[in-house]
Image 1 (cartoon, rainbow, N blue to C red):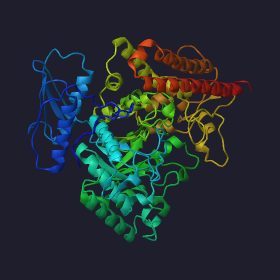
Image 2: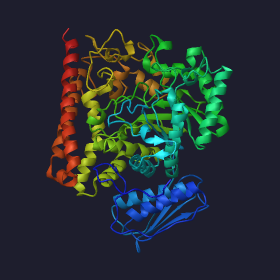
Image 3: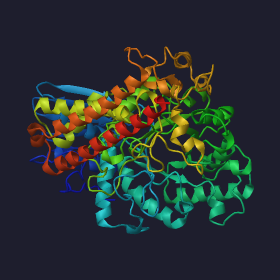
Image 4: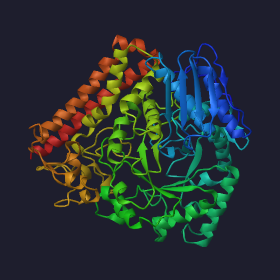
Length: 639
């Protein structure tokens, strides 16, 4: 591949938060490498610095000391505006390059020498694309898929697609994302056929110098669906041989292929359960096929339904997988969503992280805003993820990585809403360093995206971002309410939702349990589903007792009387009204701020107009949530 970085796309938002061009090219000194990939990586770093470093000379230096990972060390001298980036690996030099350019864009002053060291906290920092071969994107809100398969042959891709995907690669490398699953977990069997594997090789070749490893979501039933075996039973020798041959074929094309992501026996997807085999049987069969190549199977725990009739849905992942803890092979990782349900605006952490103590795990976050207003609402998700990390520290727990369901599409600005870009950015920064604060990340993103403005304006926009997730919770589902969205598309409220032809656990009425006595799902051991028992102490006892349960999870764990008094002395009903009103008022305040002269002068005209229009939509939808939900729930109080 060419090591040249394409020039900035003039279309607004297309180059995301990537470095701006400097007025003069910088002088860059870098090592020479015989290895092609290493040389390409260093050439990219050199070009980024030549284009965007506004100081003096930058030296890229490979060293033998320090941690043997992709970390870097930076030393800046104010006297001559020079910098040295040191790392043990070429990829560390690239990450250090982007860190230096980020510092240049966001630093508060350069009147003293500066030095710092950084290394990734987690091994796998992965995007999961839910993209389909036909170009559609499940839960995608920014246009069609970025993978234009029709523009790729086994010999290459069109120039326009290469330029677009190079921006994608740069953006990911700039925040340390190092792995990427190209396709939907509801996978098509055709993704493992030769034509698609040859196209995948072309993508892998482009992404490799940026340190990004490609993975595939696979359909567990692929050999049967492709009529190459008579079954997909993981204990069948012919099936095992088929996957072994398929792995050999993939690694011959892509020697650094990452492995398989699998959604099995979930929401209609085939899996080992179809043959009365366990998840461990299925995962281990695939793991054995990948083992010779040092690769991994990531097996999702998002499994509920058929085998758990009558059981509280939020308990089903633990019930399903805990009996298999310790039975998975060492190159299998269990990937679990941050909450026990399904990426709600607020959930308690998923107790599967407490219960699988012998199985390597990854956390799955959702960057795309399926349940947080899609790409129509401004909702900055870093505070949500930091809340999860406060319960499940990814480093202390020894997680093998973090995956984020991607929010990219072929819209000019990649993510639909200009501020949705901040969630892609925040995911990468937190996957690299979970100790970063939401405030730090918002500040970085604003300055890199819109440039430097007066400090009051920037601070006001930071406050807007930082409060936006709580505003979303307030106007959608406060006090622990959850999953009362409209069917299928999950945009807008439908608290009365019930369809006899649907599983009950897909219906909003299943979750809020409103009646004339009160509201909420009783998940206590004493009188309810017993979900609190799946949590470690002190949370088990904390959640069990209505008097100690944090109010933000109150209706998640308890069915509460309408006149129950919260800590502030207000009744449950009064508090619901207060929260819905606060959420709507907060969004109205965002629009007032956005329309202020200071913000108009700070943000370019095209993006200002986009956000202004979207904030109007968000305000209308917030009011719809307020009126629909309060009118509906008030009907129970009138019995």
